[in-house]
Length: 326
Ligand code: F6P
Image (cartoon, rainbow, N blue to C red; front, side, top):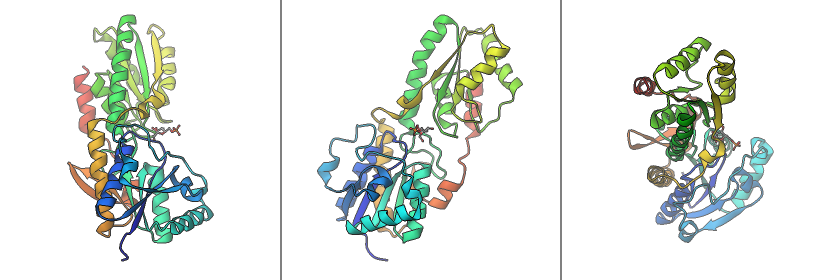
C-alpha cells in the first residue's frame, strides 16, 4: 500500500458547528506526521472547479471557535455522475492529492464511498452534521451545539408561552431523525416530542395534549422533528387546532439558526479527537471508514455500515422524557 503523502480536506453538505475545529485538527495532525495538506473549497464541487489550495498550520489558526466552515460547503449534483467524479479525480491527481478526509453527513459520506471504490482512493470520513443520524457513532460533530441552541431558544419561547398560556409546537431540524427533538425536549423541559421514529396515532396525540394541559400547567411546549412522517409543527398544529379550538396554539420553526454559532467545548473536543483519528486511520492503512465515537472511545466504522443502517433512538431517552414531564 503506497504511503500517504498529501491529504485533501473538504466539508460537504449542511455545515455544522465544529467543522472548523475538525479542519484544524486534520491539518495539524497531517503536518505533525509530515503529510502535506490541501484545502478543497465548496465540497466536491471544488475538486471539479479546481478550488484547491495548499494548507499550512497558519491557515487553520484562530478558527476553532468559529461556526460554519472556512472551506465553504455545497451540495454538488455533478459529483453524482461518473463524468463529474472523473474530473474531480483528475484534478486531485494534478495537485498530488493521494487521500481525502471528507467532513459531512450521510449524503457526503455516500459520495465518498462511491468515489473511494471507483478510484481506489483512500478516504476517511468525519461525521459532521447537526442531525446526529450516522450509525456507528454515539454523537456527530455539531450535534451538541445545535442541541444547546435549541435549548436556549425553547427557554425563551417558554417565557412567552407561559405568559399567554399557550400551547406551542416548536419545529426542530434533524432531516428524518428525531435526536434533536427528543433530547431538545428533555433538556428544555418540554411536555413532549414528536419524532419520526415513533409513530404517533391521532388519539395518542390528543391524549398527550389533553393530559399536558390538564397537568395544572398553564402552557405546554411540544418539540416536533421536521419530517414528512411527523408532518412538521405546522401539520401537527393544524390537527390540534381543528380538534381543540379552545387551545391557543402557536407554531415556531427554529430553522437554520440551529446550524450556526460557536461550537460548544464538547463539539470542539470531539472534532479535534476525530480529526487526529482520521489521519491516524489513513496512516494505519484504514480505507473507506468513518471515524466514530462509542462510549468515549474512537472507532473506525466502515462507510457501508455508517450510511446504510438507521441509527436507533435510545428507548431510555423516551422514558426519561415521559417521566420528567408528568
Ligand atoms: O443535514 C443538516 C440539515 O440542517 C437538516 O437538519 C435539514 O433538514 C437540512 O440540513 C436543511 O438543508 P438546507 O440547508 O440545504 O436547506
